[in-house]
Structures are given as structure tokens and as C-alpha cells.
Length: 589
Image 1 (cartoon, rainbow, N blue to C red):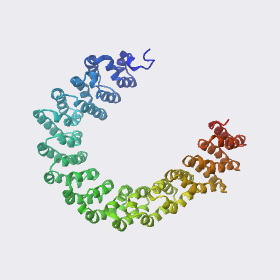
Image 2 (tube, one colour):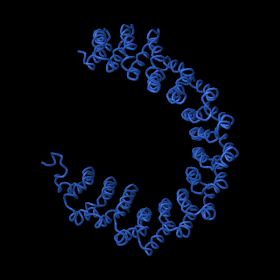
Image 3 (cartoon, rainbow, N blue to C red):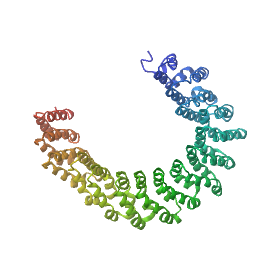
């Protein structure tokens, strides 16, 4: 009976426990998800003595069920009696941390890390630390990979003897025979280094880092690069050159492109970690090499970091380094053969203008922007257009319009309709960056021309574009600039253009408000109800339905209702259907 009422707390516990044993995976999964309900009903004593042993014994199940179980157990502390009994959760989680499926192991490790903070220092040494040791010396690589994620959470709160044992176990895992274990150790090296005392960072971690960075597997070496960031932030400046830099230089020139890619991807973080002096002497040449790398993925990752790298340089040498070392590489990348590289560069190159100032931007960067605006890859062009605002701040609108705007206009009239479509989508952004006067002077006529484009997708996008422009510039601007031109198309000999007028009224009515809609748009829509083309007439019915929500009841009753009633008797089936639908939606019957 309770189950029928949907009250979980009264759901028969015996049924839930039976479902844990059921052959149907979905039922077992549902029951696992209600585990906290079962535990609450059983009480803390029975949860510890009956439920947890039962769960530990039935660990052999579908991965989906085990994943749910690993997640549930991480929130079980209060259900077993609070922090003093939290160690009862370790046996089932230990079993889950050794299963074959990676996502289950990762979730079990996440839950173990969570409950480790709820152990007292004594419990940590008595219960948690032995678990970590068992996992670290397990026969299967699965348990050893799980152990790697647990060292850093227990190390800070145990005695120095136990700390020495933990360091030894971590050292063993870093030189494990199985690449998966070394990979797990490499991925946790930086995290473990952060909780170690500085003397052990120098004596233990550096040697492990050097070994992992020279591993035969590139998947291990690239994870060592990530650890490099954490290690470099921990060491004093004077030790970096001798302890970290040889390995980092080696990684930047690694034979595997994946390792070089990781260096490029982490470059800004590495730069902050090693400080300005080493950056100037070592990282600038390394960055140049990455920008010229033979693999496109590496060049793209490095190109993505150009702006950040330049921003992080010290002010006294920033301009010199950029002009002499970085800019020549950037100029080469503008005409790179790979579009992902050019696109990555286009997304950040505009940011250099704020760093280099007006004169350098005009002389060196504008030609590059122009080249990218004319690139055959649409993504490159759009990345430039979407970042115009930062160049505008540096060189001013006039300079920008003389150099870049002709290229934008050229794209707006491109023979390929997808290129025109892409420019339309960026028009509101451009309008916001350039301001209303400039927009009216240079770009307004383009926006109106798109409304009569021969491709429907362009006309549709142009209509949507007008709505966004009105939201940006306001109803008064719309009334003076846009509405008269749109309504003028109602008399166009081409019925497709007349229909565009209706689509524009649909889009603009809400943005323009009741007054403009009633005075200017409604009369035109009503007049078009007499159009000879049935497609136009049924679109009038749809438009009246759409703008009806903006109009007041007087206009609806006196002007809209008679027209819709007439259209409801139209000989064309579609016109009749949409007119009746509008009458029904607007409640005019």
C-alpha cells in the first residue's frame, strides 16, 4: 500500500533488499539508488553489521550498478553512525577500487578521498593507510592504479614513519612494470608533490619526475609535463634551473607530438611557474619552436597561447620579445596550410593589439587581420570578426572602418550563401562594437539587402538579425530606420519579398512594442490579407496570431477579428485553417 502512495520512507525494506539480488539489472540499479533509504530504515547498527557486509559480498555485478554503488557509499558517513564508524565503508569501496571498469574505479577512489577527510588521524593510520598499502601492492594493475589517487589525501595527517612508507610505495608505483600504473602515478605526481615537505620534493619527487618524463611510453611522458607545473611552483627560483629545466627542455623537443602538444597546451601555466628570467632565456625559444612545429596539432595549441604568453611577459622586455621573436612566427601561421592552426590564431591574435599599442597594431597587425578576414576558411574569418572590439579600443573606429570594413562588406556579398549567413550571424555583435551612427552609415543598407536575398535561409537569418538589432538599438531607432523600409516591401511585385515583410513584423512586434505595432505594422498586415497569393494570405493569419499578443483588445476586436473571420471563409484550405487557428488562439470566437 505504501509503495502505491509513492512514499519512499514507508517502502517495504524487504522488497528493496530483495531487489538488490534480483536478476533484472534495472531493478538492482533502482535499489542501489535507494540505498540511503534502506540504511535509514535499518538504522546505523544494522547498516554496519548486515547491509555493508552484504554489499561487500555482492560486488560482482554490472558496471552500471557498481558505479551507482561507488557513488552512494561516498555519502554514507552519517548512515553508519558518523565519523567514528566511517571506516566501515572501506571494505566495499576497496573492492570497488579493484574492479576492471575504469569509471567504477575512479568513482570508488573519489568516494574514498571524500571519506578520508572524515577519518580521525588515528583511524586514518589504523584503517585507511593499510587499505592504501594493500591497493598499492595488489597483484592486479587495477588496484595499483587506484592507490595512486589516495596517497595525497592521507599523507599530511599521518606520522613520519607512515609517511616514509607512503613515499616508498609511491616510488614503487612510479617505476611499476605496467604502463597504466605509471600513467596513474604520473597523473598524481603534481598533487602528491604539493603535500610533501620541500626536502622530499627535492630528494624524491624530482628523481621520479625525471624518470617519468623519460619513460618509454609517450602517454606517461605527457602526464609528467602536467606535473611539471605543480613541481615548478613548489621549488625556490634558484633550484628550478638545475632541477626542472633540463627535463622541460627535453619535453619541448620530445620525439612524440603528443608530449610537445602537452607542453604547448600548458605553456602559460609553465611560464608563470618558472618566472620571468627563465621565460626570457628558455621559454621564448621553446615557444618559437612550438609555433613552427611540424605537427599541426602542436602549432594550433601553441597559437592558442600566443596572447596569454605575450601578456605574461615582463613589461620592460615585452615589446622587444614580441616584435623580434613572436611576431615573425605569427606572420607565418597566418598563411598556415592547416585551417585549425589559422583558426586558433585568429581567436587570439586580436588581443595582441592591446599589448602592442596603436602604431604597432596599424603597421604590423592590421595586414595580418586583413589576410585572415579574406581567408577561405569561414571559422578563421568569424574568429576575427568576433574579436574586433579589442582592436577598435586601440586604433579607433575610423581607422578600423578604412582597413577592415571593406573586407567585411565583401564577405557580406559573397557568392557562397553560407559565407553571407555567417556574416549575418555576427552583425549584431559588430553593431554593438561599432555603435549606432557608424552602423547606420556603413552597414544598414547591407542588412536590408539581405531581406531580399534569393536564398530563404539568408532572408530568415536577416529577419532574426533585425530583431537583435532592435533589441540593441531600441524601438525609436527601429521606427525611424528599419520599420519604414520593411513595410515598403509589402508592395513588392515578388510574393516572397512580401512574405518577408510579414516575417519581419512577426520578429519585430515584441521588440518594438504595442504603439509601433498598432500604428505602423498592423495596418500593413491587414491590407495584405487581400493579397492574390494564398501563401501570403495564410501568413497574414499567422502574423495576426503572433502580433495579437502585443495588441490591445480594442484593436483585436475592431480590426483583427473581422479580417480573420473573412480569411476563415477563404476558398484556400490552408488560409482557412490558419485563420481559424488564430481566432481560437486569440479567443476571438
